[in-house]
Amino acid sequence: MSADERRTLEVGRIIKAQGLKGQMLVDLWTDRTERLAPGTELLTDRGPLHVIASGPHQRNFIVSFTEVTTREEAERWRGVVLSAARLHDDSVIWIDQLYDAEVFDARGVRRGMVVGVEANPASDLLVLDSGALVPLTFVTNVVANVRIDVDPPDGLFE
Image 1 (tube, rainbow, N blue to C red):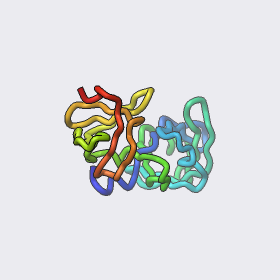
Image 2: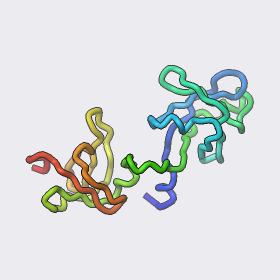
Image 3: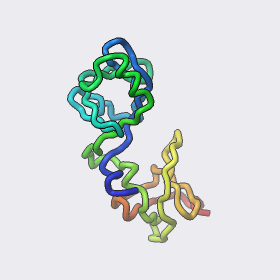
């Protein structure tokens, strides 16, 4: 992952036009709904979009953007991925901070390097180059993209 890719995160996707005045149905991929607050800038491969208003609709959101004012314009945005700058929240482990980090257990034994993160209902899993899967619930410390310390139960790496 390049430094530029680490500066922004994919946060959602435009599903389709919704209404007659350019509103769009957005599938938000994050639980951080402030991503759709009025005044927020979302980035796309077509340029930035600025949120005027948004509201929940079933499991998605209806969003109005400054740059899109008609249904016809909104239809052309179908399927476009929305990205945003990473929020500054020290209490959160961001997925992009996990990649390429070396994982060490509580005894200091290197267990592998993070090559992926898999969604899992109980806890997302670190995918290590060794083939091991480590639930994020066992992470005790993260130095972004460098080192992750874990305190797993006995037998996890066997």
